Image 1 (cartoon, rainbow, N blue to C red):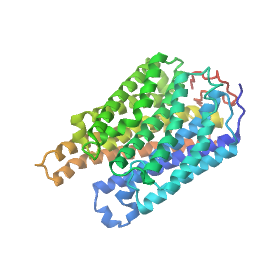
Image 2: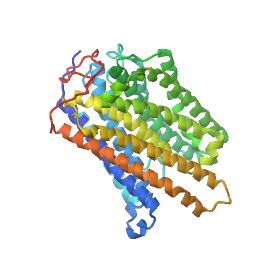
Image 3: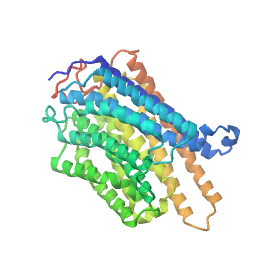
Image 4: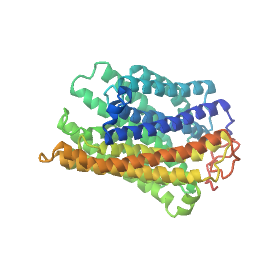
Length: 476
């Protein structure tokens, strides 16, 4: 079945991806500012502006990376991928364009609210009800477009990407809507508020963003490597475990809090079982990359997917380590949370998103990526930056936790422990920012067609008249 080209669909894709790149650049700059404020506390006195203080900037950075960069980017590349797999054209382009604009407007409003009045204090819900309504309105339209073809016309396609997409499409409105009603509707008093915040945090990352990233890994890695995924039964078991236990992971981090001990134990068990599911997916995806070193060197998209795949394993191995009882009590209220965020957002989601953009954007815009040093700079700067950030925060959190549990160590000494690690984290953030600047230079130049389309890495025919059977390996 041929997919007719749609300039209006391409417009919505362009809005989502341009917004994603722009929010990533802004978030990277604010992240550097926040780390500088930790290293040089006197900045708060030199520039006494409340809305750029650390208490406003830190939650804003997390918000911009999660909803602006990753979420917007994932939705944009999914609008390219899904119609070309299902063979069903997306609905009215005007609706999609409007939904893409609404999503960017919601991020803008949320940013203004956090800068002006600070975060709401709710975990992963730092914005007001009006922003929630905008997100849900936009997602209702975008999700409806992405759900087309999940049944009939995609039956002949791979099953696992379809299952992960189905789970992810349901997770966001279910989790966000429930969190909004219980947390701000007065229906979750006392300790139940804390429990619901951790559950919503788990929904956001482990039931929405992670399954969306797995859609690209299970759909595009076989296409780029020319190898099919392995055992379907193992994949189904991993999918069931991911969907079943992903919503409880956050409870393992609520150590010594106002939560029943059995609920904390359930979070630990869910995290460890989710680690088993990740191991199952690793066993399915690893053979696709075995012996593909030369292809990874030639294809920038495959290179990012490879790093994103191993970051997927590393992220959940780290979460399983943090869930262990002895480690959990030691690292509570430390910087290990920033290390987890760096692994998930920068290394896992960010690399998968970059690989998907490099693979799929040419199919939507009839462009190719140039043989330009910026492509290599993007990969190495972002990979090195993410590794430095995660490593620095992980070591800082462990040393900080050990010191906090020693009553003989004064707080001033603990602060001195953290400074070298914060310097390394700042260097990593600067590297990562440079990588995003390199990518943005190529990305915007490609959209404006400022150079000829050479070295294409698209996995769809350039005329965008792709069929359901057109997923073939690409070689630039």
